[in-house]
Amino acid sequence: MASTPPELASFIGSYFFSQPLLVVHVLVPKGSRSTHWRPVAAPMIKENFNATFRGRTSSSCSRVVIRDCQGLVFRACTRRHQYVSSPFVVETLAFLTMAIFAYDLDLSRVMFERDSLHVIRRLTSLQDDYSKIRALIHEGRRSLLRDFSEATVRHCFWEQNLVAHLLAALGFQWEEDQFWMEEVPFQVELAVVAKVE
Image (tube, rainbow, N blue to C red; front, side):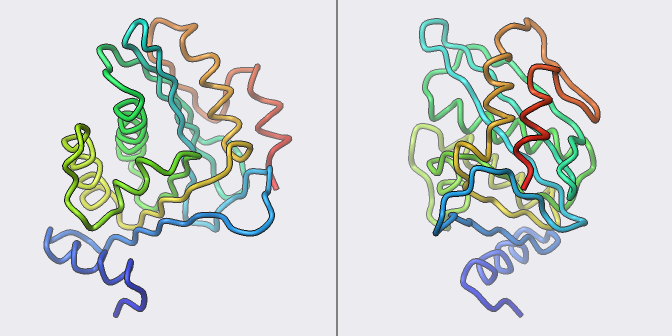
């Protein structure tokens, strides 16, 4: 049986939606500030995600980096979005892009990391969301419950999400969505190696 309030909430939500048990944790790092990316224990996979918003053109670019328990890049992608109304929509679209990417790769045990708490807290809240992004938040919650057997949602520091940030700088250079298998663009490779703890 569930031993903590988040586990109990996940159990009830899983029962309600007749889905496999979903473990959702919102972890906020405490103590000393680490600047290195930390691997997860197998069989979990870690996804870091980020987004960039251009208000002038109402466009955004989501970036996702998936790494294994050794810190090696498993997959990465950038995805462009048009007609985006606010930075909060951008953050939520980045999460949905990441969740869809993980689902398409048939990943079931995933730790999602982002350096912004706004969307993470909304996605994992037990309260109804009445914000302007509620439809996207609802879809994100459904994805967590429906698509993954175990999901941990974790806040990380900016430095720990550096590879996704570097992809952010490159994302608008390409007109099309980009996907990489077991690699990242050469401009980002050094950060992948240097930032593993």
